[in-house]
Amino acid sequence: MMKALAMPFRPAEDGDRTRQGVVVLLLLAVMLFVACLLSLGIGPTGVGLRDLWTYATGNSASLSTQERVILEAVRLPRTALGLLVGAGLAVSGAMMQGLFRNPLADPGIVGVTSGAGLAAVAAIVLGNGILAPVAMVLGNQFLPLMAFFGGLFNTWMLYLIATRDGRTSTTSLILSGIAIGALSAALMGLMIVMADDRQLRDITFWSLGSLGGATFGRVLSILPFIGAVMIIMPFVARGLDALVLGDAAAFHMGIPVQRLKKIVIVAVAAACGSTVAVAGSIGFVGIVVPHLLRLVMGPSHRFLLPGSALGGGALLLIADSVARTVAAPAELPIGVITALFGAPVFLFLLLGKNGITMRDMP
Amino acid sequence: MISAEHVTVARSGRKLLDNVGIDLEPGKFTVVIGPNGAGKSTLMKVISGEMKPDIGFVSYHGTSVDLCQPVELAKRRAVLPQATQLAFPFTALEIVRMGAVAQGALNPTEQARQALSRVGLRGFESRPYPSLSGGEQQRVQFARALAQVPQPVTEGVPRALFLDEPTASLDLGHQISVLEIARDFAAAGGIVLAILHDLNLAAEFADHLVVLNHGRVVAEGGCMETVNDEIIASVYGIAGAVGRLPAAHIPYVLPQSRHR
Image (cartoon, chains in turn purple, yellow):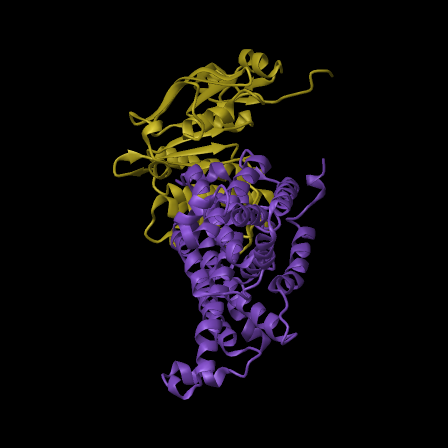
């Protein structure tokens, strides 16, 4: 029985994992569907899976107004947001790991999330002041756009600082990430000192890192960012695969390396920044999902990127369902759940053969 | 024909290459020899289009390399780099297939299988690259280069193989077989440029030898003109190393300690 279950996960005899990749993608799609049902059908109110079925089959008239509102205005946007945020976090992690050629690169750990957070806080604090005209023009997109530029700035800095001749050692990656993250946190502290009471409330609400305040407005504000990243995925997959062999080898195989790197940096910032803007910082999704997927489908980005999108969405929806129910009626911050699960995986990777070794020591 | 003319590369005030000219003709196996730091790898980087020279230019069949898109260059030449390490566990087949995909193969998986069996690695398809020995990794990379230019001549245009120390971590048998594959590639009308440290192998396989020292071409031609006592002594500082068998058409090199 166990053997049969492990069948699709064993490396194919002939070294070609294409079929394996397709099978895992299908399984992930099923998993995501189930996670969506869970997320829509579970909650502290009595509205359950049966009501969801009634609603979905068009008999919504038999539900009370309250039940309909819970499904339509609370659960549906929350599920949609969780799906987009989870997909964005996992894909940005997978792309970043490909870019830095290091399985430990995660936007949360290396300061990209902090950069996006700093920019989001700046948007809240300065949105009524010097940035008011910009905020007015952009409306709903102001916060995600600011967070995107914040994330972009930090990713670029990290790349410039931590990469020498196209190679990034784990030590320099993580240490520069810590420095960049600390600087962003310090600037965020300055911003908070400048904030007034109402802005402080907004910042606190934002920084809790939860899908709790999900509205369709938020879903629509990050949809263009996550959508754009999903669209470019197939175009960067081959390049990221080739990049694993090094900048030079990728160029020899016809990849326009500099252009690829620019596109990937912008995509990482878009996926990570926009999710930070709507859901605060939710750690470790970007490291856990790609890592687990590499174990079952291999490292090729052709399958890893779409797999991360599906798996990230599913993982976040499951984590959110747990966060909502485990201490009901209170809600756990979702970041707590992902960190409980993710931090051990990160440590496992750090101590493994691609992590910090004596080689990295000065 | 691929040619480099007047190539000069300077880094931090030192000339890595100084006015180097080299012609790579179809059907010829060209070997670059020279001591460490002579500029051999830099020359290969410039010719492959990876590095822009400060002065001089490189052309592929009359077209400047600057005008070629990376995708077009990838179809014209493949490069075998020195040791490559991976952070992610691709299988041998997946690595080689990247070369076939770069070439635009219709069936890259099949092409990758053929390339693997050409370098004697049939049966290694599903092995994770990081678990292979240094020599096996080197042969997987060679197979990747072969999968990228499977035919020495396609549509009347010769393709090129650039090999940076292809024999570095190989045992004696595989050193010979890798160089034999490269020689066959040249014999069928392709272009081969290799950097070698083993002068005996260089003398045996090269149609044309280029001796590089301090970024300059100090000698070029057949093995008799280049691998001789005078040049080897001046370039490597080892005197009396070159011997000739009376009937042989190639020299042999038997280096010995300078202080004995």
